[in-house]
Amino acid sequence: RLEDSVGVRIYNNRIRDYGGQTGDRNHAGIETYRSYPIMIENNEFVNCGSGIYLKGTSVATAASITSVVVRYNVFRGNRWGLHILQAPHTSAQPLLAYQNLFVSNQEAGLWINAFDNGQYDAKWVRFFNNTLVNNPAGMASYNWQVFPAGANLLFWNNIVAGTGN
Image 1 (spheres, one colour):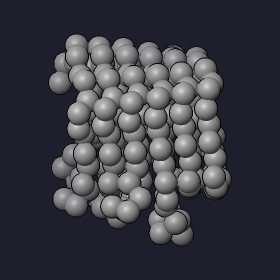
Image 2: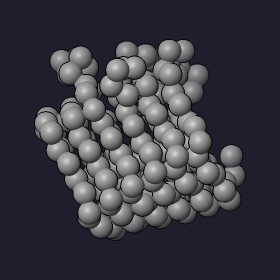
Image 3: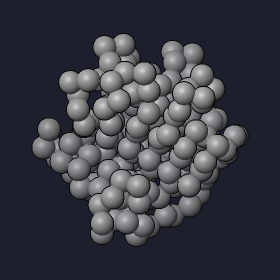
């Protein structure tokens, strides 16, 4: 868990069996609160509630969001692969998730929670060049009806196969 951390790079790890049995999203291989910039790369997440759970922006930290990069990771058998909550990025500092592999996660490869009615919802998420295989949903979200009109979410150039939605 990263909390109020700055300039962190997490790489070349195998994280497994943390909360996959309970299905609790907070049982994450890596969970972040108000931590920027960060780079998470070349890791394997297996049988966790969430492989990576990016969350926890507050009024005091929303303006300080900078670079978040999630790349070259493998997510297998988690409830959610990459789970995003409260990440109001900007066009100048988007959240980048690319060249990851999501295989047989229980609900979705990418899951975005959008339920705080705007100010801290996920914005400027760039999810591209990923491979998603045998996940019930490639990308899903809780409460799309309040997803902000200006979210500028990009789900682009991904390979999605064996997916229910």
